[in-house]
Length: 587
Image (cartoon, rainbow, N blue to C red; front, top):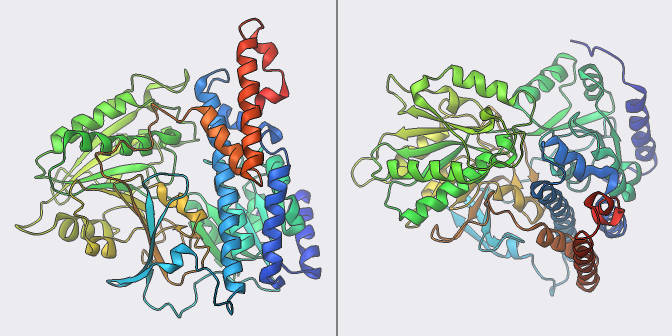
């Protein structure tokens, strides 16, 4: 199967620019001190450049999500997008620098060991590092679990002289994902990167041109042309590695294309999806604990219209759990309370329709929310609950569990109860979930427990890349900037959730999973679509973390507050369209 066309001119120019710099100064040849300087240069540029409004990227993003531009939800999305980018870039590069400086000071007895590395213990089949706090999120901590054999090397793609370039195929559902994929490949894997942007997010090219300026031609970018151009790109002789954030079928097709064209030498890493399970221990919860668990699940389901790789998809419980009906009531209340956003991603609603077409109508219930994030929300954008039943019975519906939804559906599965005295998670839930004939993928999951009875055996045995205890499973992705990782479990050999991982800045060998610990379920969760953080708070945090010093950041925050207060007073006398014409108002 040959590529359907030649490389477009823009692709060839981007490739040639990478190769020219590689021929004189290969990225892999830079020593640790040079890589620290490169990270410093990138941070200094980030602090100085006008990235917040580059190409109106946040406005384009809000329009993609079908939010009204004059709405509070639009401004909230703008502020959150800027903060997420800030935390990803500064967090990753800060930890990267810390790790290299620690390595370079190997002979210095007074050197300070990074906190994560200083907390190490054996746990079953694993070596565990941590726990340490998740930056920026109160009462959340995480551990890194690795397999035995710390003396072994991590399985990372190694650049070759003949094919040094990594192609990063940009994600379509989140702007920060391509950023993380690129800096991980440049700094952690030390590969020059050609970014091919997703057709849904072409505006990122102007933003990334600013952000990656200090990297010179170690990073080049192209816009999407068509399938044939992408095929020609990944088959280019100079490409030795491909990284994809996307769908399992896309990853499979790329691997087959490479193999059929005698490019088995090209390595691949991928971050794909999963039918993310939300698992309940078989025990008694208070009503407020059930409400908070439901709130966390609904937040994960409705965020981005259900179009996330970590979107909640399957609720797992014992069929004899005494509170299963009460939980269903709390879940439906939350589905109504938290607003729905448009399911904007192409073909996601078609997938929902196809999935529902395979399920009996009496097993499905559409739960409309009482509020929506946009006037463009349609009936099918609301979450549909699917009662799948119990595996092994004639009535069991397996399709919503064995395929990734990537749409607003949420299914309920009731497993057989544990035998007398046995732990439900250890003896029933874990064996069911580890058998990939039963459920799609191994990316992330959440476990909810009132009495903190999630055993070390459960955490040791459960094969998911992130296990969040009493927390949102998306917390696993947030750990990538501070020593954690994000990816499918390495023992899942179907690779439905991808191969390899991003993060792992400390390069811990045999990394298998991240375990995140949230607070007691009696505490109100940090995430709630019905009560997002005020934009002014997120903007203030962005200013604080996107400057070289707290003092400069505070000065900018004060300036921002003064300006917005003045504009607020001015709006009482001047038409809003005049005010929004000021460039400063957008920033």
